[in-house]
Image 1: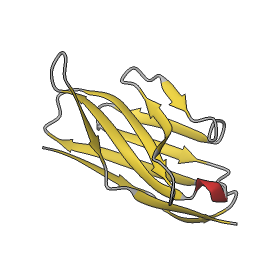
Image 2 (image 1 turned 135 degrees about the vertical axis):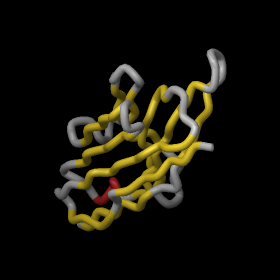
Image 3 (image 1 turned 30 degrees about the horizontal axis):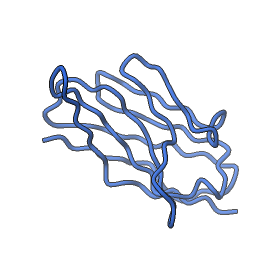
Image 4 (image 1 turned 90 degrees about the horizontal axis):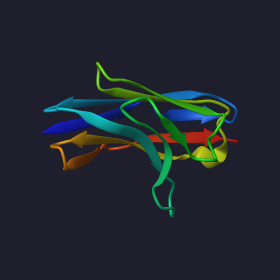
Amino acid sequence: QVRVVESGGGLVQAGGSLRLSCAASGTISSINAMGWYRQAPGNKRELVADISSGGSTNYADSVKGRCTISRDNAKNTVSLQMNSLKPEDTAVYYCKVVLSASRYVQLTYWGQGTQVTVSS
């Protein structure tokens, strides 16, 4: 059983910053990718940023230059530093963790989500 828990969401004014954190716990053999996704009301869930086990990062164009993703492999955690926040960043942010169950099998786990609200 694997548990993924996010923290750090909240209400912030436009131009402000937030740091989201996510911790994976339980029966974990090897974590591949970790990432952050978000979903605003009426929209599909979309990638914000992800990071491979080797540290390669990928960002959505809408957050490039404003967000930084990082991970601590020893603690099975991933964080997202968000700066210069805009009202359009308002969404529920979800943490995604991809584990290697075996050589050919990967398992994906999601957190419950944390609300980020940016006021104008």
